Amino acid sequence: MAWPSKNHLDNLGEILVRLHWWLQPDTILTELPYDLEFISKTDIERFADWCCSAVSKEELEQGRYNINKSLIKFFVEKHFPDLSPERQKDKIDAINQQLYMLLKLPNYERIVLNNANMNKIIDFFNNIPGESHFEKTTKKIKTAVALKWLQDEELSKELSKPTNNFIRRIGDFYGRTKKGEHITVAQIGTYNPPPGDKKKIMEDFESKVELALMFASQEIKQAKQGLRSDGEYGVLANIMEVIKRLEKYVEGKQDSSYDYIEHFKDIIFLVIVLNYIQDPYIKRTVEADKLLKKLLPIYTRYKELKNI
Image (spheres, helix red, strand yellow):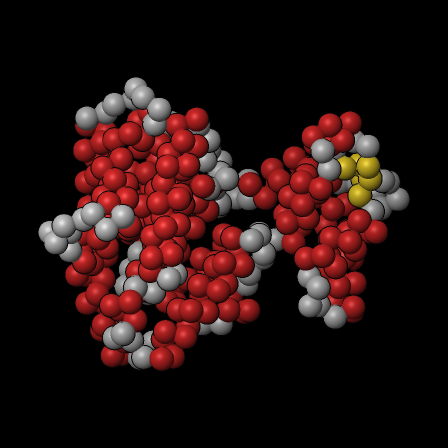
């Protein structure tokens, strides 16, 4: 399903509308395992992606190779080395069977490794009823924002050890989804924080996250009103002031008026922007690529400064 709008600022504005609804402090720790399961890739999706990267563009166009159990076995052994031989065999058989089902081929027919077959697999998962590119991207951004907030040092100091441990667990599984793994709620487990932690999470959300989301929405609204589309960043040039503030911060040039809350609001906004322009579902533009090259090293320096 297509994105709901035509340019990056419209898309970011729509994402923020969803985040205002989806980021709820009383349910966030309950929802995150389900969000991770929703955005993670299945084994067959990972295999299709890997196939497309394992051969050259020319080889894929010409269909020089076939997909067989030997190739699937190589993939499984490479990506799931910790599984027992029995479980690896089960996964090989499952992927092989799914391939024939999705491509609607009889089991005796060979499967050609070409663009047509890979696109059928990818299109199938991209168009599952009830899902959309937009929802998957927004859920990824919701998870990234939630973790940036829940792992914030000021909040972590207020939460119990079990709650902090679960938040770290969510962070670990989020990293695995970004590597393309398929994650289930059963793997992650669920967690209900104690009343004291719930109260602290609610208070922290109201004092910081609500403000950060309102600030981000206002930034996008103002950028759209004073729309500039010239220059190397196109319409994205309208959000450069936030990036410049972070750049000054990592260079140690910010003055004392740039306090903890102002800094937190900027970081949440840039987490949203960075995850948006890096997401494979969005339509990449030259301007977005240039903004990524500008923002990514600044954000990397920020993480090194914070030891995260």
